[in-house]
Image (cartoon, rainbow, N blue to C red):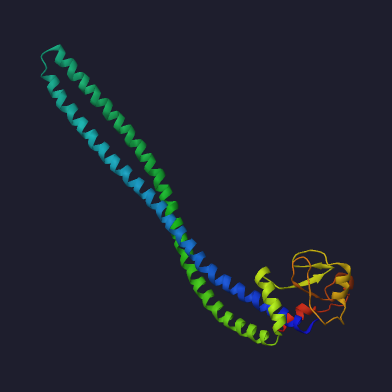
Length: 259
C-alpha cells in the first residue's frame, strides 16, 4: 500500500465523522422547528374545535331564547283568542298559535341536534387536549436533547478537526491535492477494492489493474477506480478468495481501531 494511502484512509474516517457531526448539528434545530410547527398546528386544530363548541353554545342560547319568545307569544295569542268575537279572528289566532307551536318544536329538535354535535366536539376536544399535551412534551424533550447533542457535537468536532489537521500534516501535498479534489467531487475520495470490485461505485476492476492493486510490492503510485475516480486500496484480509479460518484483523479495521 502506498505510504500516503493508509493516512488518507484515516483522514477520510475523520472527514466522514466531521461531516456527520456537522450534519447532525444542522439537522437537530430543523427537527425541533418541525416539532414546534407540529405543536402549533395541533394547538390550532384544538382552537378550531373549541370555537365550534362555543358557536354551538351560542346557537343553543339563541334557540332557547327564541323558544321562550314563541311560548310567550302563544300565551298572548291564547288570551286574544279568548276575547275573539268573530270566526275570522279565531281562525287567525289559531293559525298563529299553530305556527308558533311548530316553531317551538323545530327549535327544540334543532337544540337537541346542537347538543349532539357538542358532545361530538367535546370528544374531539378531549383527544385534541391529549394531542397538544403530547406534542408540547415531545417538543420540550427534543429541544433539550437537541441542545445537549449540539453542545456535545461541538466538542467532538473540535477534537476531530485537531486529528484531521494532524493527519493532513503527515501526508504529501500531491496526495492531499488529489484526495481533496476527488472528495470535493464525490463526497469521499478513498474506496476499498473487494472481490475485484470498487465498493464505492460497485463497478468491476479490470483484471490487470486488479492484479497490480493486489501486488504488495507496488507502492510507487496510488491507483484510482476507472469508473468513479476514487483512490483504491486492497485489503487481503477481507478479500473472499483469501479468507482464512483464523480471524485476521483487516487493514481498515486496524487503522480505524487506532483512531
